[in-house]
Length: 160
Image 1 (cartoon, one colour):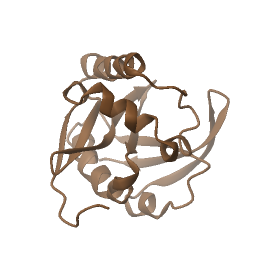
Image 2 (image 1 turned 30 degrees about the vertical axis):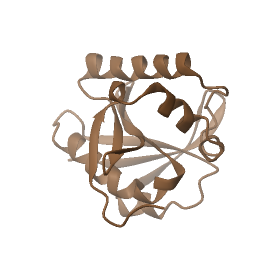
Image 3 (image 1 turned 60 degrees about the vertical axis):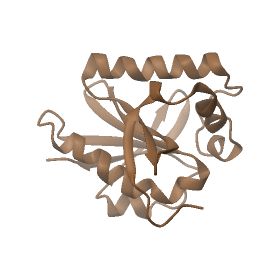
């Protein structure tokens, strides 16, 4: 269970041992809400994932972080440029699910500091039922979109 006083910090994904990312992304509760998640994560899959997320930093100047709670890996999240839009994603370990809104608020500060990011989008799987945190963040539903043959709800959060 999450400690009530969690000191959040964002570090780069290469700072996290690959085995920790493999364990995270192999958890059954993660797969329930990630319809695009490929099965059978191993060290090679995790290394390719980290390389791809680091490439976003090089290409776009913003990307994904590893998120720590009291210096313990809690998950990953951040931004990825999708065409002309910046998409925000967050994947936490089950013991840290309750920190989503707090982490998102902190991450959105980075987007708000960049004048070239007027809004961010979020793709939410249809399996997600508790969407109150999105409303509290100011997210508005754009509609349903199909991504890689899977339906998602698409939300938008203004940053300006």
